[in-house]
Image (cartoon, each protein chain N blue to C red):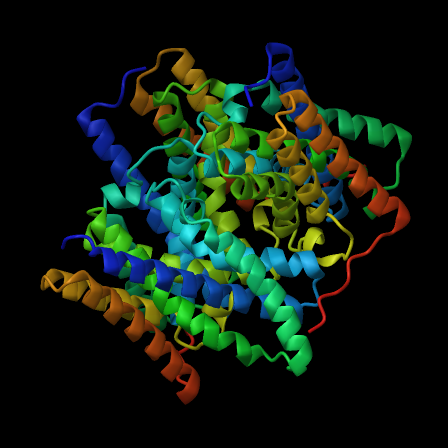
Amino acid sequence: MEPLHWWGSIALTALEGLATAAFAISGIIEATRKRMDVVGVGVVAFLTAFGGGTLRDLLLDQRPFFWVREQYALGGVFILCLIAVVFMRQRHIAITERMIEWPDAIGLGLFCASGVHQAHLLGMPPLVSLIMGVVTAVFGGVLRDMVCNEIPATLRNHRPYAICALAGALAYLLLAALDAPAWLAVGACAVLATSLRAFAILRNWSLPVWRL
Amino acid sequence: MEPLHWWGSIALTALEGLATAAFAISGIIEATRKRMDVVGVGVVAFLTAFGGGTLRDLLLDQRPFFWVREQYALGGVFILCLIAVVFMRQRHIAITERMIEWPDAIGLGLFCASGVHQAHLLGMPPLVSLIMGVVTAVFGGVLRDMVCNEIPATLRNHRPYAICALAGALAYLLLAALDAPAWLAVGACAVLATSLRAFAILRNWSLPVWRL
Amino acid sequence: MEPLHWWGSIALTALEGLATAAFAISGIIEATRKRMDVVGVGVVAFLTAFGGGTLRDLLLDQRPFFWVREQYALGGVFILCLIAVVFMRQRHIAITERMIEWPDAIGLGLFCASGVHQAHLLGMPPLVSLIMGVVTAVFGGVLRDMVCNEIPATLRNHRPYAICALAGALAYLLLAALDAPAWLAVGACAVLATSLRAFAILRNWSLPVWRL
């Protein structure tokens, strides 16, 4: 598979920006629920937004990091934090646990696509690309929960999460093996992972506990 | 010291495979005790199995990671998870805290040997090799406990653990300084660390609390 | 800005040694309060002392790590652990939560300066240098608290902490933009961050909770 066309990589950058914003919002919400101070909320927002992508770049040995290459993302998250305060204060929105789930689901799909796509372009074997997709998608949220001193929701709450990313990454690899164009594989991966997660939330799907 | 002969590096690969399996099992057991769902158990198994080796490769700047170089390990841990379920379900084995300790002790020795050996081959100074041995041995278990939201057992439970790895790594460096063949140094390190840990468990050795 | 003169880089090395020692002490105190065993205290001391600098070198892709380049630091922390026991036992010092704060404040300023300075010398854009300064300053303490199974004090306790590092890093960048000599920028950054933190402790400044 050749790299994306220029409009494809612009689209990918836009998607990555969106995913970053989605995770940043989920970090803001979670930190607010823990009654952290202003700086703490900012730190958790940054960790959640950039954790997954940084780990991806670190494991794939890609420098500079995407947040060095495209600094607008750093500034963007900062501005997002400000907007979030003003907006939510005006509307008096009650912060519930469920509110994290929607931005989180979108970020899940987008980061999964970016992880598996980048690993695939670097010529990683399929099994490794698969894992990079899942790791990129999941790590931001895991970091958020670890810093907030909880068992990561991903691992605990019996709702499909990492497995949605796995399905998305599998779809990407399948399409890549069939020589589908990059934009199709990337798109299918993101849409599949996000919509599986959305269904899981709406229909209350639950994974079996691991009983031994 | 020259690198291992071909049969030596096959033996090392086999040992690393064993260590990975041992840590994966300890992760499966711990996650099951925390009543995680199926995916959570898998994730904790992977983190515990590959955490120490990945940190070793990251700190020593060794790419590709050993789980990229030798993908059988990724597949192996996956199959191990499946076998673990079937086997333990059939036998109705009760999961106790002590059951982690045996695979964990074996993994401790083997990863310690792989860490100190790799650092030594790269020409790191002895003090750094020592630390790489301990870090490689200990980090998988620390990550497992951090994800499960506990103070790492290593640091808390007053049983010698990291110090066994330290003794093993010291033995390696001593033998390396005496120009012993690599297989002897690697073997001595693994056996010493694991058997010290085993004695510590069996005899209930305990470290003094740090009272100030 | 050109690199520091030889006496400047000796001064920087000395400062980094001091910062490492300061964080190591804060790690020893925290681990002791958690009643960890001897090895646990040592591990937390090492994590706190070297965590921030290692993350800095990892993110900036600087090898070898500073603790490989300058091994005296590793030995130094080890000796410090020993001295701490003897000294504190003799004086029967009661360990209070506040005792961490002073070495921690000094380490904060010094590591912040080393992070922003190194990123700036590597030609990173200002926003990235800023973040590297804050990350280097804050990460050791965050790691300490995560291993001790607490929400990092930085994020939770409503006292300015990361924001002091931010102010220091801003001062550095401002002076660098004005072509001030390196020693002045480094010094101003460290002094500003540490003294802001000290005032925050003494005057009980507190950040607003993030209320939405």
